[in-house]
Image (cartoon, rainbow, N blue to C red; front, top):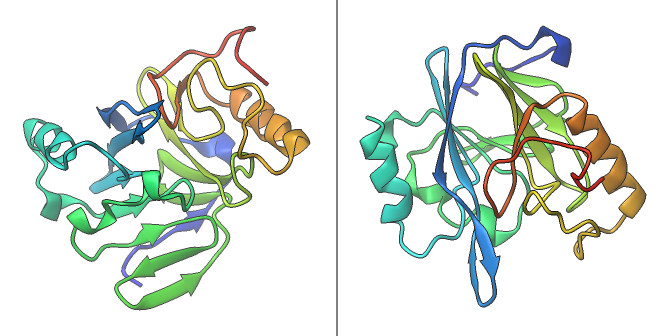
Length: 201
C-alpha cells in the first residue's frame, strides 16, 4: 500500500491544510447532489465524497480552476457508502480510497479502522457512526478553522432526526464529539456552517 497512514490523537492536529468545496450538495428530491470537497496538505491532494452531481464537469471544472487535474489526486475519502457520495470515485486514477474500515487501492484491500488515521499532520479521519454505522468524518486543520467534512448533518439545519440513522443516541454522541472539535462544518448536502447553540444535536 503506497499511502502511509499514522494514528494520532486529534489534539495533535496541525493547521496547514486548505479546504475547498467543489460542489455544495443538496437534497431536493428527485434531485440530489452530495457535497464534494478538496483538501490539500503536505503534498497530498484529497477528494472527499466524489458522489452524485448533475454533470461531472461540476466536479472537474472547479478542480481545474484550482490548478488541480484528476491525475494530481493522491487520495479519496468516502464518508459512507451511499451512492450519492461515491458515484464518481472513478473520475480519479487508482489511488487509495479510504473508508471506515479499510484502504482500497486497485485490487488491494487493506483492513484498518478509520478512527484516528492521519493522512497528513493536518488531516485526520474519525469514525463517526450516525447517518449510517459506517460514517467517517474528515477533520482538517486550516490556518483559520478546524473543519469537519461529515454527513452527521445533511445541512446546518439538520434534520435533527436523520431518517436514515439506525441509532439516534449514537448520532447525538457523534455530533457532540465533532462539535467539540470543529469550528466549521461542511455537511453532506448543504453549505458550510459554523456550529452554534441552534445546531441540531
